[in-house]
Length: 165
Image (cartoon, rainbow, N blue to C red; front, side, top):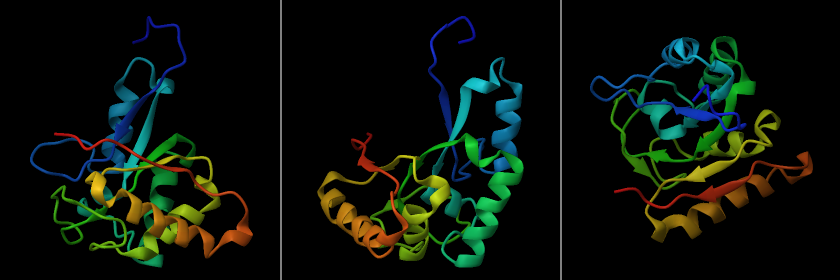
């Protein structure tokens, strides 16, 4: 990786905390990043389902503020380069990775409304990781959440990823 002269970066994705997986906490992600040869080429992708499953309560205003305040203190908002926008089928802190359609699970609409309208994330792309038959409805829900705050200018971009095995 260090020998590659290009400008590509690797994104570490937040983990739900299943089994022995690393990356459940922001501190673990920082530790991983600090140990690579080229930490300047490693950034973070926050999966909303995973952070919720790991115990970060982004479903409330207070929890959202605390979560991204902690992210800022531990890693720095500048390292957040992408979002996987997924609701959760499982409750807060369950440490189980089960994606649900946006605004239809345990996280609910507040977190997604805040994310798509948060000026800190206006240039951070968001990707849906749900079964394709739900993409259109999820994109419409996210669009409505952005339109509710349209007076704030530009907003985050949202795209869909193909469903993985």
